[in-house]
Length: 184
Image 1 (cartoon, helix red, strand yellow):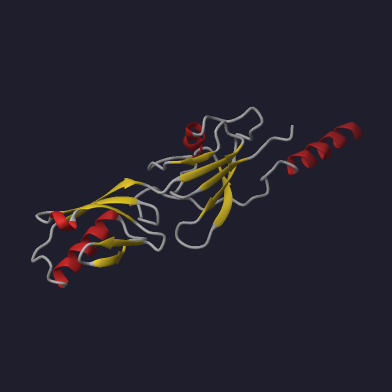
Image 2 (cartoon, rainbow, N blue to C red; image 1 turned 120 degrees about the vertical axis):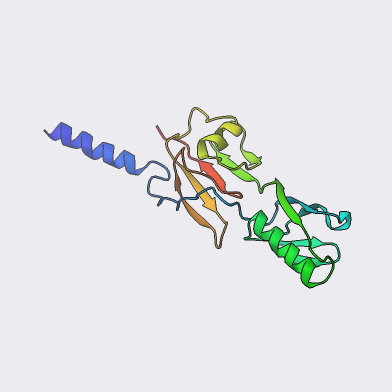
């Protein structure tokens, strides 16, 4: 009886020593309408106006510098919302009578994968990416990796938030994923 109790106590103590085990879960990220943010590369197509078409980068303040119009806030908007805002601005400033604008994302903000993966580093984000696909892009787990969960630092939509994620958790652009090392 004492031996069984000792084993149970030892097992619970070792489980409590698992790295990141006590980290609270990160709120879910639901992939859907992608929100533009600093570091995104976009293509703006303004029908009939080559001067207002081209590739642009969203700066760290969430703004896009456009010819004639100046800087326009894009951060936090979907590509279709930004296209509508740009068309409205072009109409209000009387640059075009009835502008037709479309916006597409060429390159998303990267994600970062650290810790017990074969090749830690910065990787391009793609919509629908999960913790497991990020690990796969980073060369897979090392033999010492904790594979059932990881830590994620998310900065989209306000201050940075850290929490625990599982292999099926969706990632957001700009996430920093840390794969823990097993102690045993």
